[in-house]
Structure formats: structure tokens, C-alpha cells
Length: 124
Image 1 (cartoon, rainbow, N blue to C red):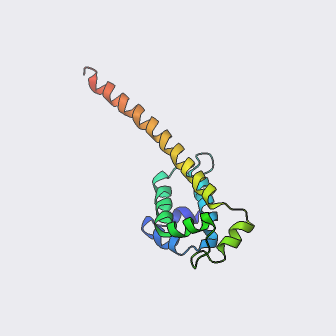
Image 2 (tube, rainbow, N blue to C red):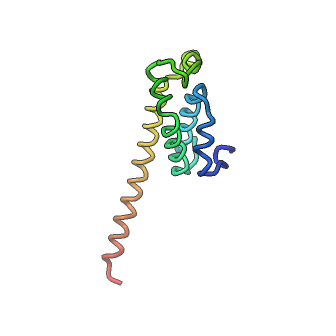
Image 3 (cartoon, helix red, strand yellow):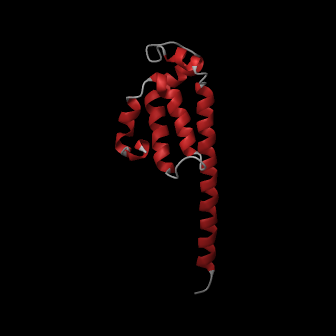
């Protein structure tokens, strides 16, 4: 996949080159990549992408979510409306996927922590 071959240092540059009409599709893609069943296990890589999207396009996403037409959004609002892509719903879906992955990781880390404590307390 091209997505996974992009260097972490280049992610903000790639995200900045994505225009407002493609932001809903990017959010949808990122939420799919975060799903364990359809995405990849590279959680930190996905978080870099999500953070870059928020850093670079936060104002545009806010404008799109309230339907405000600005120079940043331009025709993107019409395109988003035509494709029925609700930016707020896509952001919520992304948050749900991030939260679920975080919860799964916390359970694993807690299990490892308890096992290490048990092993440390057993006599040698």
C-alpha cells in the first residue's frame, strides 16, 4: 500500500497537500485503517496521520462540520453534501476507532504488568 510506505516525517506534508474536498474520504479511510478487522496493526503510524490531519486541517474541518463556506472549504461543502459525507460523523467514527484500539491496548498492557509483578514476586 502507498499509505504505509509514506515516511512518518513526510506525513504532515502529504496531509497539507490534501484539499478540503478529499478530507471526508481521508477521515473515512483512517477510521477503516484503525479497525482491527480491516486495517493494519500499525497504531502509532495511524495516530501520526490523525494528528497531522487535526494539526493541518482543524479549521477546515470545523468550517465543514458547521456548513460554513470559506476560502478553505470553497466547493468542498457542495461536494461533501452531494456525497452525503458528514464530517462530524466521520470525526466521531474516527474517535470511536481510536478509543476502541486504546482500550484493547490498555487491557494488554495491564495484563503484562500484572504478569511481570507476579513473576517478580516469585522466589527464584
